[in-house]
Amino acid sequence: MSSSMKNLSDFSHIEVGNAKGLKFAVVVSQWNAEVTGALLTGSLQGLQQHGAVENDIDIIQVPGSYELISGADIALRDKSFDAIICLGCVIQGETRHFDFICDAVGNGLANVAIKHNKPVIFGVLTTDNLAQALDRAGGKHGNKGEEAAITAIQMALISKKYK
Image (cartoon, rainbow, N blue to C red; front, side, top):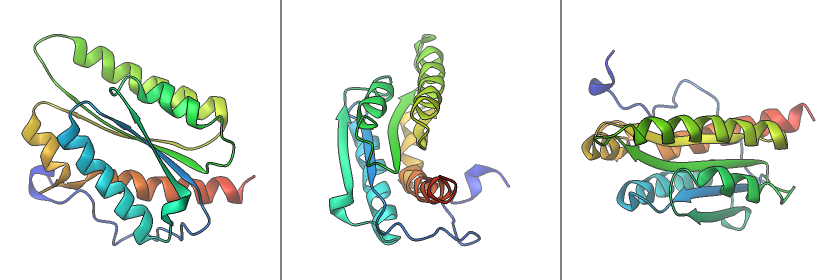
């Protein structure tokens, strides 16, 4: 089914697990704040709904999506984090800047995860326009921030199991 017809944040078919005792950093871009603020809200709600407590969640604000890479790397200097959630929004413009930023952020976050051997979750919207971003930040398609939180919980639990 096309994404235009459904909420993409439906977790009813999976067992998420309990986040109690897990520690998370949420690295969030300040650029496109209307969108990233909604992603952050969804992420925090998702974590807390599954047992994470406020004291085990650090929020780190960075200027833009490109800086999510450094933000995640800096956060992982603190060895106590079980997972890092990266939230951002890159909206297509008239130049190839969009392509370069999206590619760099995806590759950079993957490299940080490998470097630190910790889950680093890609919660970055890459949309054609603001309306699409808002639809995915708490609108008709759900909230990618909540999806990132669920992913972080699942990956943190997997990582702990196989230490």
